Image (cartoon, rainbow, N blue to C red):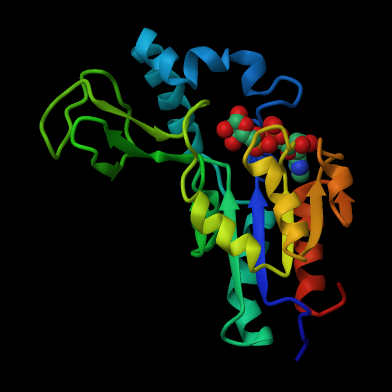
Length: 244
Ligand code: APR
């Protein structure tokens, strides 16, 4: 029986946790924003200008995301969520806050999870405000199954300039956290990049697990660099056996 030192853990993930599953990150060499202009495919203005271009971009990413599998890092976080309450008591909890829009955390078994930038496998009808699961392609001709109108269905993705989801809940969980771990994110995009500072103010221990130092690496009390599929399972084992 081991005894974790932590019982309220918030984990922020970014594109780097899905890289070894085969999904491109955004800002690494050859990444998504080296191939596409984010202003054309990931802003409300871009969608207004050319909706079909935006639909084609997300149709391609939605199809890709259904061809890949979780890696050992995703599975380690699902294990931590299952095992922590058994070790640290029933009140112990792990929350994964992901910037990613793929569903690899869910496929790996994470349940206590929020997608702050939305989800590829969801659609949003801006006419009747219905949000619904969506695995096929989408276009301006797509008819909303709820209100039967076409032209209003868009990917349920938070674009640049739009408000990320679940921010109040995330803030309250970080405020109560005793451990904050950031995995596979470059620390370029707010508000996610500011979560480590909120966690420090809350008195949580802060850890960065990333391939290389992120923009905010100096803000973390502890950093480990390497591929997520290697350093995340190792760190999860150490949290569960109380050695960190
Ligand atoms: N293991 C661990 N980390 C990795 C790996 C890996 N195998 N491969 C890459 N990384 C790290 C990179 O070093 C980088 O720091 O993952 C990070 C990816 O950074 P970005 O490409 O900027 O992705 P992310 O931080 O998730 O972007 C945040 O920006 O474009 C928006 O909405 C989009 O959610 C995204 C947000």
